[in-house]
Image 1 (cartoon, rainbow, N blue to C red):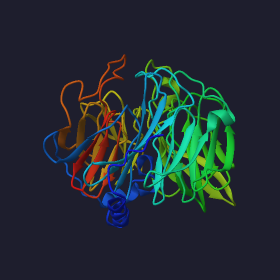
Image 2 (tube, rainbow, N blue to C red; image 1 turned 135 degrees about the vertical axis):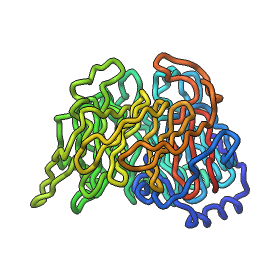
Image 3 (tube, helix red, strand yellow; image 1 turned 90 degrees about the horizontal axis):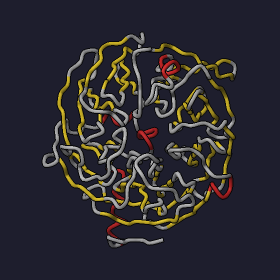
Amino acid sequence: MIVDWLRAPSVLAMLLVASSALGDWPAFLGGSSRAASDAARPPIKWTADQNVAWQAELPGHGQSSPVVVGDIVYVTAIEGPMKETNLVIAFDLKTGNRLWQQEFSSSLPVENNVYTCRAAPTPVADADGVVAFFESGNVVALASDGEVRWQRDLLAEYGTYEGRFGVGGSMAQTDEHAIVLADNEGPAYIMALDKSTGETVWKTERESRTAWSSPMVMPIGDRQQVIVSAAGTIDGYDASTGELLWSFDKVGGNTVASPTPAGENQFLIGASPGRNGENAAGAKESNLLMRINVTDGEFVPEVVWKNSQATSSFGSPIAYQGHAYFTNRAGVLFCIDMATGDLAYTSRIGTSNWATPVGIDSKVYVFGKDGKTVVLAAGSEENILSENELWTGGGGGGGGGGRGNFGGEIQYGFAVMPKGFVVRTGSRLVGVGEF
């Protein structure tokens, strides 16, 4: 392991003390901070040369989103022709300067190419530091100053993951637990780890399956539940014990999109026919709003509405100001009335969408694959406010092509800040707006 200290400890301590002045984005899709993002006021216009505060090159390659706590941005990446090195890196939110970097040996060296997950799971962070899960089964926890707190090798403990494209589900968290979802064609499970010690709090077996969606923690009734939508089922687990509380199996094509909150005891589910249309029938019935009815301690799932016109490919659907927004890899946005499930409009946004949109300040931001971000006014009528490009052309500094346009530089994810975004591509971090 190598630590690259680029700042004096006293300066790093000052960064940690200043954390309360900024909003946090501590998990995939913001975690529980997602709803608070509507208080942010990021810009609606930027280019590679305008409204960009800083840019930072990343070692290796990564598909995970950045997470932010205080003034520290955490990202993960992998390096090597056989993905033999896992990386966790911290940056200064205000300047983009690298604070430290830690390297760990992978327990599952496989060929590094555009068709496999490459540091795809997004980590989780809090005031104590960051916990990162890699598709190699390695889990590492680091303090905010880069010191390693604990490590685990889940493959050595529970068996090797199997599948053509790797494990892609991001982590979720509660105040005390980091949650790992290992959906794959080998031993599949969901588990909670104590963030302080790394010890297993609970572990629940799942049926083997091919899926890359992520678990989401939501309040359902009087419990925190971990909701998982993956390859034929939607499941709710007790976040404290791992008990399966309910399951719904009348869905299909739900292999990538994650469930997202949509009101009390409600969430949206997204699905896609797949690259070759193999899940077309199931996906047609699986872009929907689900409610969990709570009666006498029992949890019963109910489909409130479904829309057979919408699809959700890589990004997940969102609910915002009375409408749901579904996007797909073909560059189509579907705006749906949350009350009825009726289609309000469709928009050809001109960019394949790989990241989940976000609603902020009565606007919907759609971060497209090739560096283009479309900003729309929220509401029932199409109104595109701006189209922004971090780069033009096919590369953007990335490298490598691939069938299905999986190569090159891609906007994989972002973190919402009070006056801007931290955007992550395969090999760069970009601070858009003010910090």
